[in-house]
Length: 132
Length: 293
Image (cartoon, chains in turn green, cyan):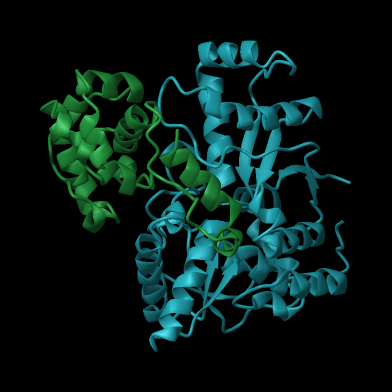
C-alpha cells in the first residue's frame, strides 16, 4: 500500500515479535510456508521472504501486499518445522498499519445487493482483518 | 431429554439457514437435540492473532459466560469459523490466567468467566457422542451410489490444538458419510483454503481458489462436495456459477454435510439441492417433523 510508505516504523522486527509472540530467527528459510501457501501468486513477496525481511529488519515490508493477501488459513503454521506461526507475524504487520487508523478496505463502493449476497462471516472477517 | 447447548452464529440465521435446519433435524433424529444458547452474540468471526489484543476475544467470552450461566460445560457449533474462534478463545483463556483476569475486570457488567467450557464442532459430537454405528442404524435412506468429496477447508483443522481430526489427513467427515452408505472420494484439495473473506474486496482471489477446489473434487469422481462452513459454501457456489457460465461445468453439487446426512436420515431429498433455499428446507423440516421456530 502506498499509504504505508509514510509509515516509518523503527525496530519493525522488535515490534512484530512483541505483537506476535513469535521469534523470527527461529526460521531457517526452508521455504515450506511458501510451498504450501495457497495465495503466493497474489503476493509481491513470498511468505518465507516476509520472514527473511523481518530478520533483516527491512522497513519496506510495510509496503508489501503480502500481509493483506494472507488470509490466516494457517497451512504454513501447521507445517513449519520450526514452529513459527507465520500467520501471527502477518497479523502483527497488519496491526502495525491498522493501529494508525489506515484501513485497507472500504465497503463504501459496494452496492446493497453485493453486501446482501455475502455471508455475514465474510463481511465481519474482512473488516476485522483489514480495518482498525 | 438430553440436549446440547448450541451456538448458531450469524450466518446460520441468514445465508446458511439450510445448514442449521438440516443439523437440527439430524440431531433430533439421533436423540441428542441441539438447544440454542440464550442471548448469544457474534463470536467475533476471526481469532485475534496478536498477543495484546484481548479486546477482540470479548465477543466470544460473552458466549462462554452464557454457557456457564446454564451450568453446562460444553458448547456445540456448526459454522467452522465460529468453531475456530470460540474454541481458540476458550483454550487461550484456560491457559493464560492473566489474560482471563484482565478480560473479567473489563467486563464488569458480566459475571466472571471461570474457564473450562469445551467448544466442540458437530462432527466431533457425531463421532464421540453418537458414534458411527448408531448413525448407520438411524439411516433410513442410505446414500447408496452417491460419491461425496468431503471439504474441510481451514478452520476445522488449523491450528492443530483445535483441529477436529488430523490436520493433514482428516477422515471424520468421511467416516460419517460411510456410516450412511455413501461412497467417499479422496481429493487433494480437501484441506485447502477456499479464499475465505477475500471474496469481499478481492473476489478473484477467492473464486480462483474455490474453482481449483471444485475442479479437483470433480476430477476425483465426486457427485457432491460436502462443506461445513457458510463461507466455503458461498465461495464454492459462486465459483461454480462462474465455471458454468464459462462453459466449464463440473457436474458437482455443493451442500452442507448436514444436508446430506439429513437426507440419509429421512429428510426430503430437496435438501441435496446445489443452491439450497430456505423455502425448500422448511419443506424438509415440516416433512421430517422436526420444526424449530
